[in-house]
Image (cartoon, rainbow, N blue to C red; front, side, top):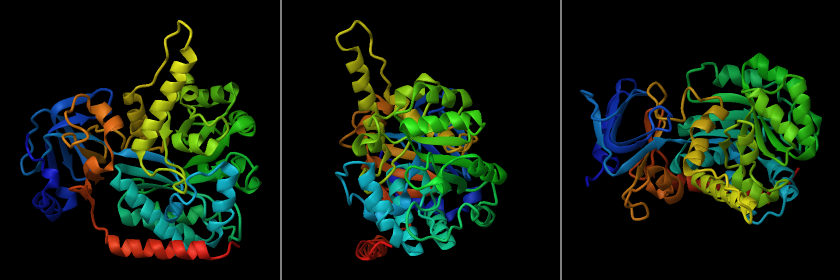
Length: 463
């Protein structure tokens, strides 16, 4: 077994010495889990990155002048894709680990802490969430930024994504409660012009909204007016709090009005009626599941709706949701969904002669990568190690104590690995984590900013 070069400072130095647009990186000898249905898994394969793009995957590639990274003993896999996270809340992590229900979360966080956030608090929380995402192998994160009290709050959230180097999707929404400038959704036009003028960049824009007016009133609820705003701007829509009877009725209205489709993502989707699911499946609408959120917070049925999605032909993406009560990483989401669905399947068949219909580790890795990219409107950009896509990838050490020996690479990713096994993360061809450390972060300075922001938020009365 070779010592793989993703622990080598000299290799990183050589990579960074070369101009990014002319850089060539050849990973050799890895187990390559492409998540491309046509390429599958390559044992002892190579992968070539040129600039920001994957240009070849296969055995014994020839790449003159490339920086060669010996990846023997590792797994190369696409970076994970988070389809829904409220990133601004990160300095409030696990402040309510045993939250009883959605109402408890809403009143404490959205009606309380959120109302005192300054733009700098938005920046610090969003940056912390994005850096943590990178550390745990999430290369694309949709930030459902629903605390845009002013233009400056929105700017801070976007700039935090930009400054970390993550492939970020800024989904903008006005706040539920408290004072704000009522600049949303009109400010989306300015945001699009200032930060998202190019279609070939790391950051993309979406409109964020709620399913119904039950929580925060009609101004934030999806319908013809917000759909028109999104269409005019040419951006997708992410709809949160999609659950229960009221949301089922809303889905049927949207279907009737032509407001569903591949550019619309419905988040959670728990406790929906069969008729609503048929409308979603028939329209090509995407779904973002939040496995631990549904189960732990107890949203409607509290069961992630993977079976319902698959039954109508929707392969969902996965998401983190709220770090105030939940884990930050995709490994947890994959394992939770895998266990919950298989438990349900076996339980449903127990005492009968029926065979349980169980999802696999390949399914949940597909949800966490390729389907997440499709859900975020980025299927042609990321989500698989396909030549022509951007180089968003992970190097996972397969010979670490908790992973060796490597018997099944997909099983090892889903059931065996965690952030400590991620040796390297590349986003758009740029190293963002190397030798197990997130790069270009002054951790002491970040820690001071996070603690100061938390103390301000916790000690300032809600308005």
